[in-house]
Image (tube, rainbow, N blue to C red; front, side, top):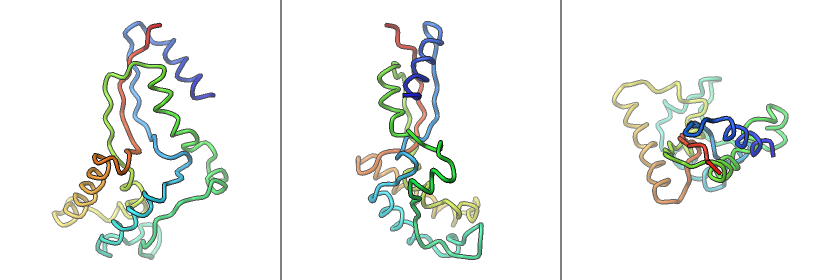
Amino acid sequence: MILSIFFFQVNQTLKANGLFIINEFVGPNQFQWTDKQVEYALQLLMRIPQKYRKSIQNDGIKEAIGRSTIAMMNQVDPTEAIRSEDILPLLYSQFDILERRDFGGTLLNLILEDIAGNFTDAPDDLAVLKELFDVEQTLIRSGELSSDFTIIVARRRLS
């Protein structure tokens, strides 16, 4: 309800040809990754050489993809991605979409959490990252997965 009211108010506040630009996480509510996401992310994680899977927060090696429970999410931050799945349908219902560019994060967000700091701009590091990016983009383009992040330029809908 609040998200719907927010979009309605933004729409009413914009001038006649006003634009609304949104750069947002639109994936699963409260990061409740799908089983398919977790499965693909784990498969890709295990293809990454161990030297890149060292945790930047402790001495461990990343070997799993976590999914917090709703209870854990509510304890840590009950507002985080609370209605992320509702953003696109509401945006499309209240604005004219001029441009939409999805930019993934569907797997990369899960895989690179706690290990992204191990990568540099060295050719070997970039080759590992490129493979991850390519697989994610292929799965999104095929429709197997959807993009969890998007940027949209929308115009005020005139009634």
